[in-house]
Length: 238
Image (cartoon, rainbow, N blue to C red; front, side, top):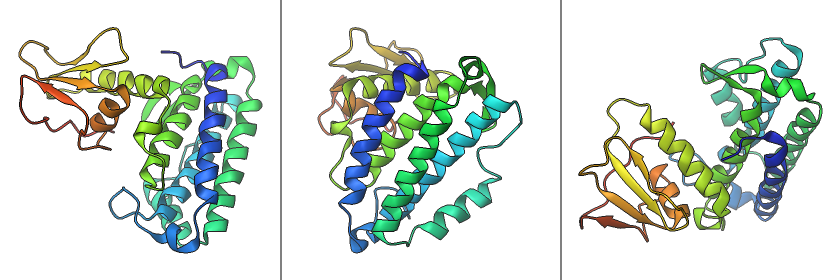
């Protein structure tokens, strides 16, 4: 699975255009309706998507200039910005998402090739700037579905869902105490495992639905378990 930013940028553009269409279709009442994220309205989710685009832009600036520019000043400021923007009109929310996405695109366009290899700090951990484009794609696709406004995990491109699934499995594999799982996406050539596969429940089904279930965005409709039984509770993601 590539994390090449130049390969993924067109995918970000397409995902963002889909998000724009959903945001543009909301009226003020719909923007204040609950999202699928507990305690957050659709306005919260859209504001978060705008502010996270700016956060990724700051990390790209850090990579380009060598200055240590944090994604957010601190967790409190991040939460305050989201809360402050959540109750705006639907038109203002949509305009903010568009403007922030444009700033992120400009930041990507301004990156010299060598800057993509620079190290930035994300959630307290170092990673290459080249991975930030994938991070933005993941934010847009997952939170677009969180809006509960006509776009769902079943609408994710299969390539995105498979890349997301691989990332989450790799992350869980490094966490002590993660429940053992065997995952068998219909679209994959190989099964994926978390922990020791022997005796672990095997989850089969469409890759989009496995990925959505594994990150807590689905109860697991359309998935099967072997041996027969209820779906296990997936580990908490991020």
